[in-house]
Image (cartoon, rainbow, N blue to C red; front, side, top):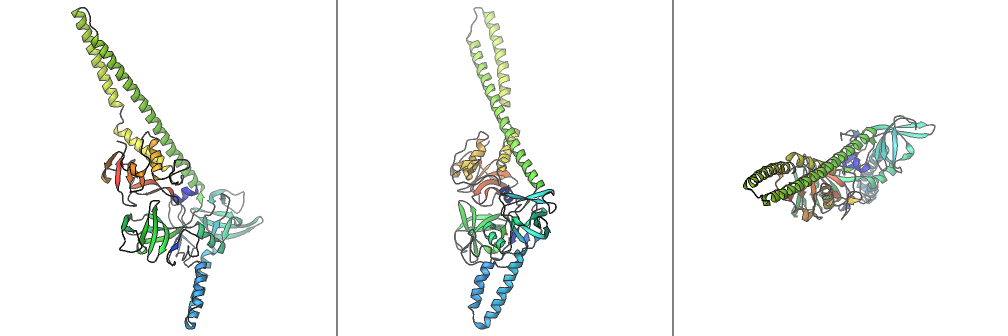
Length: 455
């Protein structure tokens, strides 16, 4: 469920970074400067990813400030006082920023309740390593409770299930996910961190990408497992995402969505099975009619009248059977409507794995994990479409079409990566170990070819 929350934008607690990091710092590792300069306000998306301001203030991380203090003490005497004062102010900002921030530390999840009581109604769940804002502290006979806001859920949890203060700040380095959202219409992803470097691909506006490191005026982005490169920081918003709570209503809605998608997929698979059975019966009937017609034509009666009568009857029967067979053969192939139904079912089935299936290099199991081409191959296999195993081979499957001809269920090849078009200018794909199966805009990177493998 936590993965579903992450992929569908319910993880929120996005803190805008001011990017005060040292050159070549790796964001992914729990290094001293990973969460340097948490931004001015944290957007806390609810179920619909709407934002509310949370008390997560702007400041450098405490670990960065320790380094800053050392540097300040080494400055000339006339500058030392001002530098130390600035350090103290920044440190106070960090401490204030994390004063009301809590990160859950539980075995799996803990319930958020309407009141500070284990008997109170359950409003939602917060999973391990998820973030919340503390609104109030309540002392009860059974211990301390926090009233918290996380995602769309506001309620009470026992304080023992949370890390706060410096402990929360330290945990944030491990559980926060640093990413960048493109703020310009098209952004060049470059091979090296300079404007003269080779352009690897073009990134689209409003798309979010994982950050690998920061180097001067550039950040290195991981697009998919096969592609990483540098973009200028001036054209992206950098932020940190934390998991958040999920309400009972959101959990129920997601479960219903997954069940609906699974049901639609199963119904379409059953329809295809019956259609193939009907097609097989039609072919058998046609073969039988042809055999009977040949026997009728080869038989000869001893009298002309009998022969003529026999031939006339045979001709009528053969004509009738051919007409019947012709109608059956016209009905058996998939009509435009049934093809559309198959496409919708493929899309629904693929979408059911968003946030619920890991990326595994070389994987082709819809239970234990897939890579990009393994995901595409296994999705289409459920509907009787045999595709090659590698993305390069899949790029040659079916027939080439233009983006204006693209329909849900077509395959988009990006060069080393492949995805399924699902409509509304989006694709579903197994992107990387960090994201698993996710949804992106269809041109989140430059497409190389689009393939129709269904009709």
